[in-house]
Image 1 (tube, rainbow, N blue to C red):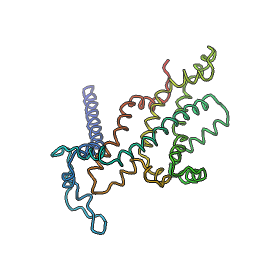
Image 2 (cartoon, one colour):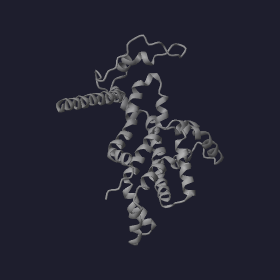
Image 3 (cartoon, rainbow, N blue to C red):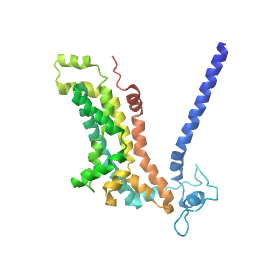
Image 4 (spheres, one colour):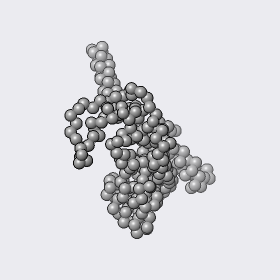
Length: 298
């Protein structure tokens, strides 16, 4: 009986492992194709995927009767696409830096606002604090598209449309990080904070030397999630910017036409690098911050 149970457990583990590997390969295939195809010459890309991007004389799409050839390894490695992106065409780098300029301030200042607000919610008890925090939860549950029109009207009244502040202000005061950090911080034992107060620590010292170090994991998690969210934003710049020179690369990628498929692969690869680096750097903190939700080691 024991041997049968052990065999069943081993078989179950093998099946789960195979399923996990298959799922991972399925999700990684588009990324691998994007990276490898970015090193293909334009002629090779056209021969492999020309049927996908071909159009009729009237500009409409054609029915794909030919089999599309998905190639993971190029016949000849070419860096011409990256040469165009990085050196010959300044538009791509300009849009890349637009993305950096729009996203980095949102991440930094949203975390500052979130940590301060979370500490206020943690240390303040009462009905008013509970009502305000409940309002934060309601705002977080609403899709961002619901608040686009009110944000547009407010920004128009403040005369901030077509400026970076139109993206920064709604992003900095987003309730997402406030909710996560508050839930995390409320699990810090009150006795720990009171012990620090008895030892002579003031409110700022309790916040800076106790709460912030304990919440380092969830703060890192929020930074990663917020960066990835706003790095891929589309609706906000389209609505709040009329000057296309201010568009981030996330919008510019969708405007690359069918005759520049190779460039699209190269630009997409460059665009993925910051998100991948940030995720790989903070992977452990991301998992720990979300999984444990504020556990405090004794």
